[in-house]
Length: 539
Ligand SMILES: [Zn+2]
Image (cartoon, rainbow, N blue to C red; front, side):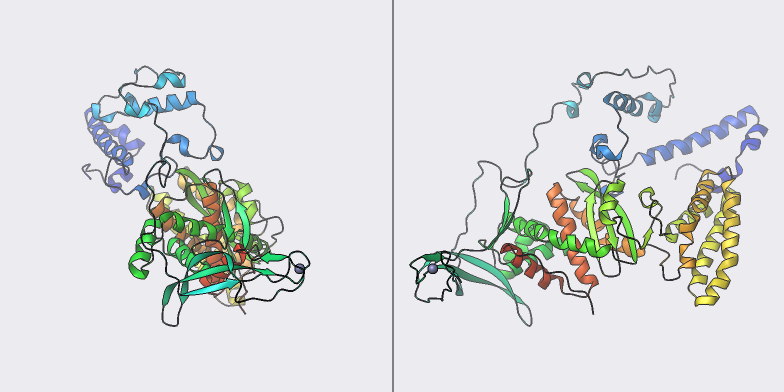
């Protein structure tokens, strides 16, 4: 801090003080205030591109340029407005280093987009088409240097005749018509190892004379415009269900990149897999979990209490939102816009229980709702640090009542009711007083509490409700850290797969079930076109 003005100094400066000053003194005071403003504006403009601040500290709404924010979440601005806004930021009014604030600077003219190209600015030149991730067309491929050596052979026989439906019996002498290698992870008592087996598919001749052939199982096909090939769930793949699960665990739960997973498998298991194969396994696990998530969503609607929260997410650099809904035994994540429709996918009209949420508008239409008190407490704490004495006093008052209410409600039945009643009365009084104040922060917090009073104090009448949505916030932590490492997902399908697999993993963890055994079974069944088993409920 170069400016010598402290918070205490600012608190003493008000209109009567300025009016009492002689002109020369007033100029001195104004210069000191300007020095402070310059310093603060410069600090506000700092971001990861022009200082050593980390990218995670950047404003999520401005990341990657103004047009990157998903258009339907913000009010649309036409190109004309955008040009003017841009002009006023880069033009003279905020150019503090020149030391001149030029109010007569010509207003930026509204020009057509094509005219905005500035030859001296390389960023305005037409950008070349962005390179796709993965192997580039024409690049040399990499093949396995040494052939796989299987430890054993598994023979697959047809069970009944395709023509006459007669029962067929395995024939150990029959020749296979096709085969492939499978690498799978075997979990042993003290660890795990990767085993290679050869799978043979055999044809058997029926008494009726027809020969029926066994084939690897096949499941659903997923199409995506963001992928060159369709993804077909099938047993005819190199990576077995448990190894595919292991790879998904390393990616989602342990947040390793595809490249690091390849390195990990090579050094610790001596197994060579390509990044493409690893990526396929993670997608496959995500897509196989879609039907399971449909079940979880249905189960969620029967819950008595659901905590909800949302956090920014990026899909190919475009800002989206990751939503979570958590009950006592189910967690579901979805990635989408911040609109209410997205919430309605998680919390449908069938849900009649209590919603624990922060103050975000999309939640307000739900009837039975408890506001998170931790959010209000943080806002009250902010007030206690403000410059105005009134705001500090009222902030401390609100803080005392909010904390007091939580403490009172932690006591048993009748005691809680007796102690909370006077607190509620005092809090209401404080809020009515505060809503008439001229201090914007104080006024808005008090009005927020008054306008949403029933949701703020719902837990007083219903002591079984939690008074914070900590569960939902905690459920988002893992994904927030992943977002900071990976900058989100790259396609709608990737987002769907990520959110679905995360829902399955976290629900298993919440129900005290080994997620990896469950997911391995889920992949194995989906590769044979069988529907997934529901995640067992805890006893
Ligand atoms: Zn037959």
